[in-house]
Length: 245
Image 1: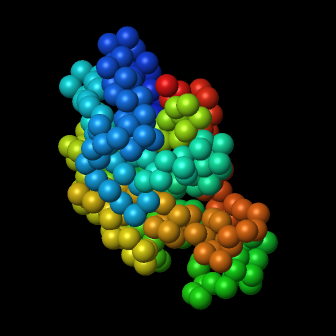
Image 2 (image 1 turned 60 degrees about the horizontal axis):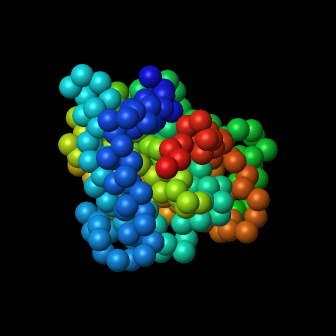
Image 3 (image 1 turned 180 degrees about the vertical axis):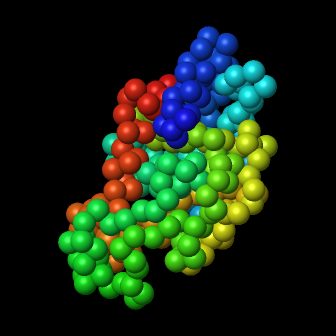
């Protein structure tokens, strides 16, 4: 099953009549977070996000998924139209790692030699990266062994509510136990990997995304899409794949 198919599977379950309570919980948490009324308290707080427990849904017989909602700590930075473009990269990175652990791909490459040369010539790269590399290599960033399918949360889903952005993911315990091969290198936050799973691939925590966008100094320039990571993530923001509540 492709990663986007898992997302659609969970979305289809949530849209069923018996899941109305979970949808109401989502709306209530969004409203509480926006109003800062502390009606719902997060289970965790990171550098830029807070995490709320939603509940459990059964996507199949003996297949419970524990749901977490992640929202920006600052409600003023949750506008969907402003966030969607930059957040595509994280969804694309999760899918890239999933494709690797699931055996769909073994390596990832720059989309062209021109992009490869420009990346190293233009964006102040301190250490030259190979044109093609494996996500199992200790080249920097987040590393995982192929076959460790439990190293990724079961799904990632965009949520849109009143023009605001959030996303659902799988909490603990996971449906599929990881083999604990996931590790994190050269990022700004050690919480990228937790309980054997890759849980966060934000722009300052994932070298894959850094390369894709052209390096850390590439803040105002057009996104070069060096590895095609952000392009992979765009489909999660389509109306047919996201959860509108």
